[in-house]
Amino acid sequence: MKQQRALIVGGSVGGLFAAHLLRAAGWDVAVFERSRSDLADRGASIGTRTDLFDILKRIGIQPDPSVGVAVSSRLCLGGDGASLCEIPSPSLNSSWDRIYRPLRDTLPAALYQSGRKLEIIEQNDNGVTAIFDDGTRESGDLLIAADGIHSTVRNQLLPAVQPVYAGYVAWRGVIEESALTADEHKLLFGRMAFCLPDRELLLSIGMPGRAADTRPGHRRYYWIWFRPADEHGALADLCTDDTRTRHGSSIPPHLVRRDVVAALHDDAQRVLAPSLAAIVRRTAQPFPHGVYDVETPRMVMGRTVLLGDSAFVARPHVGAGITKAALDAQCLADAVTQESDLATALARYERERHAYGKALIARARYLGSYLEAAAKTNGVMPKRQPETVLAEYGAAGKIG
Ligand SMILES: Cc1cc2nc3c(=O)[nH]c(=O)nc-3n(C[C@H](O)[C@H](O)[C@H](O)COP(=O)(O)OP(=O)(O)OC[C@H]3O[C@@H](n4cnc5c(N)ncnc54)[C@H](O)[C@@H]3O)c2cc1C
Image 1 (cartoon, helix red, strand yellow):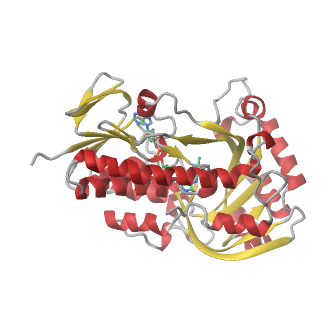
Image 2 (cartoon, rainbow, N blue to C red; image 1 turned 60 degrees about the vertical axis):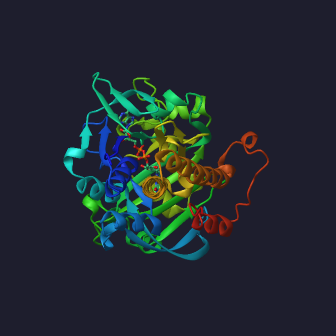
Image 3 (cartoon, protein in one colour; image 1 turned 90 degrees about the vertical axis):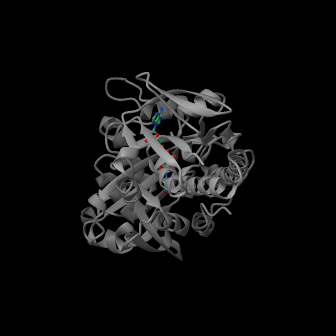
């Protein structure tokens, strides 16, 4: 039987999981990534789940202890610094590059083409063709759109599906472990620390250091602070630089205006626990980005499938984007191996992964609902007792 060929558009974690797993299933795979530079330095902290490690092992990547920083509990601090509650919750917090790097390095270089930007696809009953911005074409039996939240493929096939703004921004920052004071380190490192100012939420956690260094003293500390911001007013202002250029719904860290950072520092001092406020104020380049939902009505269209963030983007509260992309890829590889033909395999993929994506989005929306403006909550206002928030985050991302 002729070997099947998969064209994978997008060479981030979703595309890489698909490439490895389909290759192991006997397919010929080719990954096309528009970026010419290495993607390893783009991500920050990521929560992990056992399914993610199971899939890495299936690929042949054995996670070692340096894959993450161990966390023993979730702790909630009041604005005055008092400990409001703490629940045991052992977990491992990793970093984006710690997952991406081995996936990239273990895929044969010839299968990964950088600087290939997909422009449009053509498909019929017999196959699918990808057409790139330099006019070159590639043909295959299946095209996997792992091209992220602003997916070119989804925009062509389902133009009505667009990211929907959640009503708040996420400020993010990373600071070296060595920059924490001894008191801050004792209180915070090794725990996931929360602070819940009115209609806001800050979460902070240890993560691996540069070059995946997890030696004590060489790790980093990460925080993410969710704050309400209307899309055309506050978000637009946060993402506008000193030259009055607006950078969409996010802005490169080095372009964030000084007055915006100064206001963040003032607010940190006013509403956060003193230890967390001090860390926010000491962080070199915090940056904001809008929080969005993406929800597709379909994941399979002819010989094209959406995978990972091109299909569903759940708010960061569930910390599940990478695991979801890995599970999508695993389901697709299992379906094409176990089902009698491609059409049946794709129908199974649609059925199983669409239900999962919908459920994950709903959970992330629920967790974020108290951060939204009152008009957007549809009457759903979960209690935000610290115990409830800590327990709910503990269950985040566990769908099915
Ligand atoms: C604040 C924040 C916190 C997060 N925290 C977590 C977490 O704790 N845990 C977790 O698991 N996930 C987390 N995520 C999500 C995670 O980063 C993504 O879900 C994950 O990277 C899977 O994405 P993907 O591979 O589907 O798409 P992406 O990573 O977005 O990759 C898409 C790729 O496609 C390429 N591309 C796009 N268009 C084209 C084109 N036309 N032609 C060729 N290539 C193209 C892009 O260059 C990119 O490399 C977080 C995200 C954010 C924003």
